[in-house]
Image (cartoon, rainbow, N blue to C red; front, side):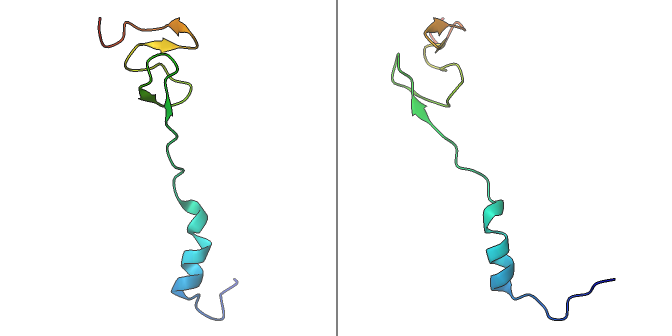
Length: 60
C-alpha cells in the first residue's frame, strides 16, 4: 500500500482545500417591484415570475 514519505504541511493542506468552499448566493432585483430575490424564483414581495403572477404574494 502506498504511504506518503513526508507529512504535508498545514499550508499545503489548506491550499488544496481552497476550492471546496460553498458558492456565494446570487441576489438580484425584481424587475417589477425592485425587491431583492434569488434568480429563477418567484418574487416573495409581488409574487411575479417571468411577467406572470404565480402566487398570491404578500399582500393577499
